[in-house]
Length: 210
Image 1 (cartoon, rainbow, N blue to C red):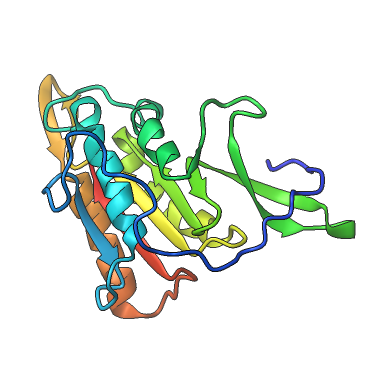
Image 2: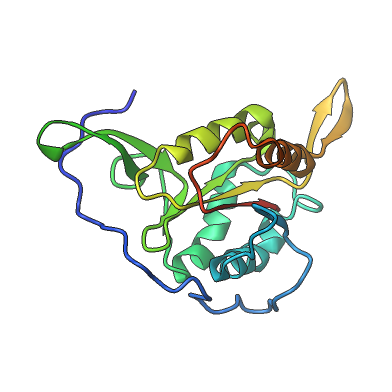
């Protein structure tokens, strides 16, 4: 349950360039096919931060590529992504204890004190980009819906970047089973944006499969 927090540091939104904000990761060049990603809505040109973030993901490929790496957890993936994200100006969760989490306000109470805060995996406050990374069973549909709703409620969130496994492999009845987590998440977002019945309060959503 969210706890009462003290007054937040004032971080008013202000216009910032949406072009590239960090260098390409060592050994990476733009336009590579890893990670696979889709930006929503489909009629909008992806802003420059998308290139930066996907380049940071590509820079960690040897540690997180689900085609070759097994047993990944969301915490392990986030640790691998942290150097690249921090280089781009993101604050990244480093642990679960107070002071290690990245918390952002959702509701304010008496005298402007933050009443409800949510944890996120990473956030770029100037761009308003919330980053959530899912792995394992957490990459299945319910987690995608949860991340969409929770991120929608965060004050000053303009974009959501959602990372899921390209393929989730696990053992079932003594044999390895593969679940196309990225394809499942993409189907959810395709339906949300195509139907128009659920209007998300974002300028855009990035889905990437690692």
